[in-house]
Image (cartoon, rainbow, N blue to C red; front, side, top):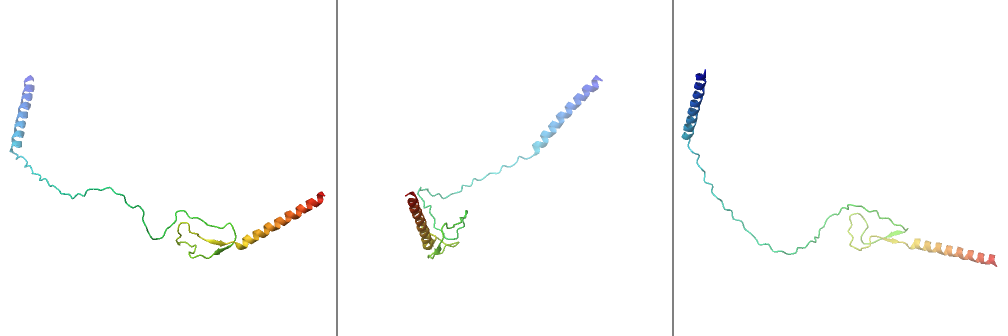
Length: 135
């Protein structure tokens, strides 16, 4: 039994050496891979030197302007609109500081003055009545 075991180990060892020899022989038959020569391509680039300078940041454009926030304009006084050269309508252009609309307030202003006079007359009348009651 001892013999058959050592025989098996020896046989395995011999087979291992034979397989290693065959592997070296087969790989030695293979031709080495040819190395490709890589050509270096040099690219030329045109370069312009940079000069720092200031640029104009204002633009003049024409077109329609759509407001992000809409504003309602209403009069707190009575009167009629005065005609002006630039109609106050959607899409019209107004310069900075230009009057949007004019209100003819002459009639309401005269009514207010009449009311003031009436109040003054009432106060004067009451004042004279108070004086006559005190005397």
